[in-house]
Image (cartoon, rainbow, N blue to C red):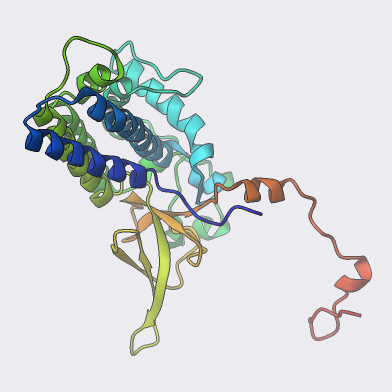
Length: 331
């Protein structure tokens, strides 16, 4: 009766709706009817809702990764828990960009403002990364390894990850965000198409424009997957060893893309420690690491929420006795 430990991916629904819209476009062209309003509306409304959810998850994830203190909060990612910081960061980006759009307290964002958030977030990241003042972590909060100058085992010297990740990764991410924005507005005005479908207006997009919408969304999904803007889950596939006995964990995502992580990893280099559980890989590497900043994906099921509220089972004191060898004594 409990939910399975599955991790839903919003891009599944979007990809399905794109395929359905292509079928409607092909049918309209074959029949010689350029605009089948009822057929288009039945598919396109769901497609644009799914597109809004995917874009929202992607830009909230990027904002959360760069502007959060991951050393203090731990290397775990929950979509639900990332939204508050993500929305606050996006509103700051929109304000800095001088636009009137804001993400409301309800969190419901339509396609137009979401697309406006993309270049605004890119500009905020660029401005913050170039700022002369950094939020450096006080020495009192550093772990002992870092205090003893073992700098190679600690990555979080600042209060936000943006100040600790590689500069070239940040530059590449800014370029990808701007490329994503251009993709969504230049070939076809996607917000205009969405508004025409959702409202009874005299003008209505043509089959050619709907076909372009499908092409643009496919290209956007490919860009977000390749650049890791969208938080896809990676799962343990296998562990391999070389002739020297050095082990490497191979992680794979839903598209079959593989990532190799050498074991074991230093605790403070920005790699989630439980690589047997699903992992989300960010687009960024810490300055002293060749591996992407990685987070354990927190299961968003009602079963997890239910069990989190249950009291922990505590053993009676006599069952926790330890014998002289250090082993637990069950008696």
